[in-house]
Image (cartoon, rainbow, N blue to C red):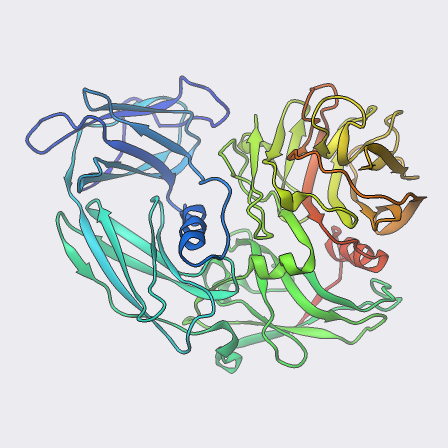
Length: 556
């Protein structure tokens, strides 16, 4: 049974910032009218995929990595009368599943629009169904594959030897599956219009998926040059850079979105020798005709005005590609990369780490109004009370090689305003393991690391102006602290030692232990690397990412 939620006297709406009066409620019964008490109720957005659960499954079966905490928007149980209530629901499209975990359930599609609570009609559970599928590859996959269900907390492992998978215990309804790997440089496909009836056993048509490296781009109908000018007339970079994450912006002036498939499904990139390049789509908005795509370029040559990549599109048969953890690879030193492009919320782990380490961030007091157009797609606005926290993890510590960088735009200045920090284990000296904050007068920026228990700092010469974006970076290589603003080195301090690990997580927008140091302003593209980025790397990062950049440029 597939149902849609509605109400007579207003639209459903809410907030994820803790307003307990905005809620969805309902009652579940069995077909014979008896109470379905103790049934599990989950609420997920319709585009949700249980990727964290997938990583956990793979870690226990294939040893490919463990996510920190499963993403949960709402999980409750019906009471002895079959009643449930879900508080603090934001506007959006959702799927609600009620399941007694004894092969009976019901699925409810729900559009949240207004500002009032809603009471759903009483629903009857029905026998759940099973879906079987087969994946066919043109060559054996190098990464384990999964089948996931949009809008539900469901994941099934695809057998690597025969391609079979089974999805059990699905309430009657219509589904879309995603079949592919998770952020590991492989292709995936959406399988739509899967109809499950009560007690049914359904077998899907075979899902054929090519390997990423085997795709033939001559079958793509459209292409364009992506020119990267690092000469004096462009980014003026005098050092070859390897495996660089290049931001490619598409808009109405350089790309016809009507020629590409939805969500950028058929977008591909190739290097000068035709090699397939990994990429990660941060945003694809066909309606607004805007996209931001991060492309891992194997070599960006220094002082070169003629180098280019090739952008391909125009293939309606193309599969989706997922390459975030390839673009921001752990092997290249990335420990955490937060685009902050998700809609603002306080959903646990709602701000995804693109590095593959699973260091996802959770908003504190963050709501949809916190999201703003920033440097690369959306970023977050911090109002002096809000923050994003990242749980402690060993990957966030590095002994003697560190780079901390981000884009920042101040709405207010003051002394010791913490923008991004990894705190000491108590609110006392040396205060932080590492951070970037305003200095004691609130007029400049400071990068600090704790070396052997003592805090060492460098301070910028730039005095930030309110309402202006700055690319800020601090690096440490075991001997020297450096600070960069807009790709220019502004401060150097010689100080050798090992960075002390205090075992804390990260906070964006505040200091972990107080609200006195809270930051007010916008933040975008936060990165932590266990590698010391060079001056040339940081210069190209600034020149490539800044608003109005012509690097790269798209040529027909």
